[in-house]
Amino acid sequence: KKSRWPTRDGAPPLVIAHRGASGYLPEHTLAAYELAVRMGADCIEPDLHLTRDGQLVAMHDATLERTTDAATRFAARNGGWRVADFSLEEIRQLAMRPQGSAALSVPGFQPSAAHPLRVPTLEEIILLARRLEAEGARAIGLYPEAKQPGPRLASHLLSVLSAAGYVGSDKVFLQSFDLDTVRNLGRRQQALGLGYRVVLLSGSANRLLAMDLAHIAGFASGVGINIRGEGMSRSFIEMAHAAGLTVHGYTFNEARAATALPEYRKFMGWGMDGVFSNYPDLALQARAAE
Ligand code: G3P
Ligand code: CA
Image 1: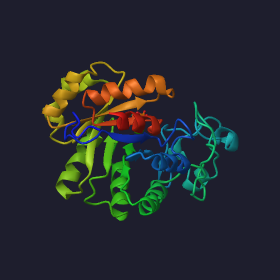
Image 2: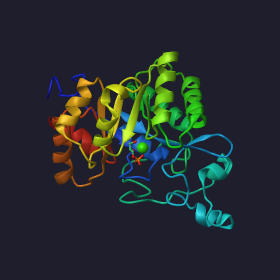
Image 3: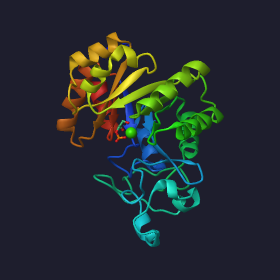
């Protein structure tokens, strides 16, 4: 086993369960998060949207119809299934639709949450994480993404995290594709000493080089990069490290071990600090083999 990795701090790369163990169970459900934790993932990743009544729910899309039965249950809304137009009470009624390789259950795994297969709030995810932490005696990282730009969602997010006792936690990563949101979160985190890491997402490493990594390091602790985007290379990771930034890559979505393991090994060998994976068990297997 490696004693020192080529990551920025020499620690093993983080395994971040992307939308939970979303290759196996419907994304962003308590069942998918719990499976990821039981597999041994370091962090769980909820994408976040605000409901009409100001609740943060875990959902990738701004609309409900891809991952839930909103289009049939609320057929009268006729095409307007935006998360922002629904109350939490309405969203709680929705059933998840499995996507991609995910099924509604995994043999041998029984989720412990009361409603494991519906759209959860951020608070419910935190409660689950706290319970699993107590059971497994290890801290679980939380990696929420602000999917709506602007201060409203960011403020709600910081309030929920503070109320849940995460102030001072280095296990919380905040991420967004929106530069202003990341700047805002980064400055507030620095001014308030919240302890969170703030990550700027980008589809391409070249875009970040053009923005100047040293500038980004003024308000963010790391960058999240599309592993198949332009400019992703070992030298990009080295430049980011030299600027003081960590690099987390998305999305490792290969289900077959024969192709997934070499891919993890390549990026981990380049010094990638974390991997967003739909199959956290495979990421952990690759890491353990190094
Ligand atoms: O947050 C990293 C990665 O999840 C970004 O892509 O579209 O899956 O949120 P997306
Ligand atoms: Ca995300």
